[in-house]
Length: 285
Image (cartoon, rainbow, N blue to C red; front, side):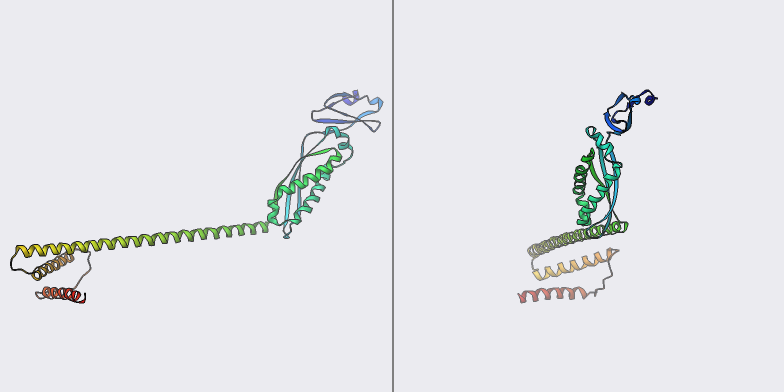
C-alpha cells in the first residue's frame, strides 16, 4: 500500500537505498519517505546497520602435523556513510568475510606447534581482524571484533594430550608422596632415637639411684648391727631381691614361664655368682 501511494517506511538502525530508473539516487534514514513512482523512483532495498556476527569453522594443520578446527567469531556492521558501497559492491558479504578468515588462519596456524596455537590464539585473532579491516573497509563495512572462540584438535589427539597431562600429574603426585613418606620416616627415626636416648638416661639414673640406696643401706645396717660386715649385708640384700623377683614372676598372670634352679642351696649359688662377678670386675679395673 505504501509503495502504491509513493511512501515507504524505514525502520530504526536501517537505511534504504533508492534508485531512479535503475540508477542509485539516495540513502534514506529511518522514518517515512515519499517516493513518487511516477518519476521512476523506487526503493532498491534496505541495509541493516546493526552489528552482525558470523561464526567461521576453519580446518587446518599445525606445524607438528596435527589437524585442528579453529572457530572464529567475526562481529561486523555496515557503515551509514558508506551504505552505497556496502549495498552495491558485495553480493554475498558473509561468504567474502569467510574467505578472508580462511586465508589468514591457514596462513598463520601452519607456522605454529599445537601448544603454541592455544597460547597465541589472541595473535591469530588480531591477524584476522587486521586483514578483514583492511579488506572490508573498501566495501563499506567495519570489523567490530574478531574472536577465536575454540580450537578443536582431532579426538584422538585430545585423548593423547589428556593422557600425557594425566601421566605428568601422576608423576608429580608420586614424587610428592615419596617425599612425604621420606620426611615421615626421618621424623619417626629422629623420634625413636630421642626416645631411646631419654630411656637410656632414665635407666642410668635408675641404676645410679639403686646403687646409692644400696650403699646407704649397707652403711646404716653396719652401724646399727655391730659385728656385721659389708659382705653380710650384701648377701642379705641379694637374697631379698631374689625372693622379690620370684614373687613378681609368680604374681603376674601374663608373664612367661621362667625356669631357674631353686632350692636351699640355690640362693647361696646365686649370691656367690653375683659376688664373683663383682670381684672380677674390680680386678679387671
